Length: 465
Image (cartoon, rainbow, N blue to C red):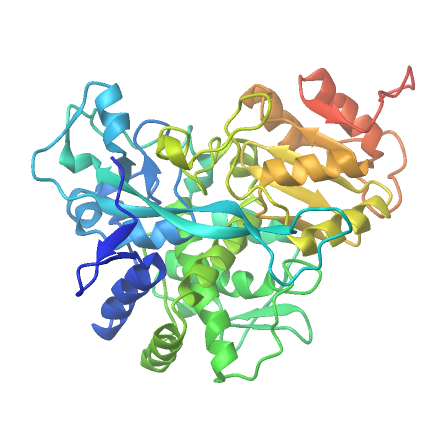
């Protein structure tokens, strides 16, 4: 079912819908009531499964602003079911949306070519064009609004091992973040690049400790060597509050994915007032904050090997083919539906250049998303995988894509190593699970398991341990 992109104005004329304004106004209303809408969007004790909204047909998670848009619906609170579907998806499977059901707006970006009036056309050429992102809406219905949809079956710990109680400890350990225990405050210090945490005994539950350190790890991700956000802002300032907004939304996303029920929030009335002021003056800020928070969540969750190997098999940062009305899709010459946000961010190209200049620099894409390794212990994730893959292959950067490899094989490779030596010396032989091997040897292991490997020939008979 398609949503109208226009609404009739007071004068009877049709005016384009302000999707930015609609979502922002809903969030403002929730903040004015004293409760940020991203806090505890689902009751984990009732759902028992992934609390992030997901598609009822594909199982893919919705991401970014759609986490907030769908999370504000009372339907998810009432049922404990995180699933959504379009009218067409339901009809195609013999399900029926209940009569009188009101759909919920979800959003995606479509890039369109427009004439660039400021550009000087080259001699003999037509007017220059540029591609700009336009926000488009489509309608989703919650599983409780659909007759015939199967009952929700939450995954077991065997199916989703990243929801085990020790998951946050694994993420913190694998991140390499310096964590110091002591004192009464939890914070991240950009100047010393360390996280300070009170002892676990200072928290009512271990889950509250875990959610707090994940919040501080979200700030840690903003370092120039990681996701590179501006962390120089003075405590209590307006810009500091903007960073807190991103860290808190990311914290909720991560806790939801890990099944942490008791999320500890330290941002109080003062921050909520600052967020209100910002959203009232800038209707696009919450969209930017949600996108940054999703990037943070992707980056940190990738430190859990099982999640990186299996989670997010079909990413719903953009809706799947059947989610998007046909007139909004565009295709390449091969006929496959392409993401509407496949354009690579300019600063990502800089990271590719850094990876090319680093011994062992490469792109690795698994079911949990992609990671670009570019030396000095630095890595980048949370990008559009297909756009980054295309750009890396074109630039000549080695690329290992293991999304088509059997889960068990990927798990063994990811957990038991060895690891790639990126910008550091190769470990002495014989190599083992904690060794750092040359990229070509590790790539050959993945190639043998069925992974796609680009810009890196086989070892040509070189001895492998």
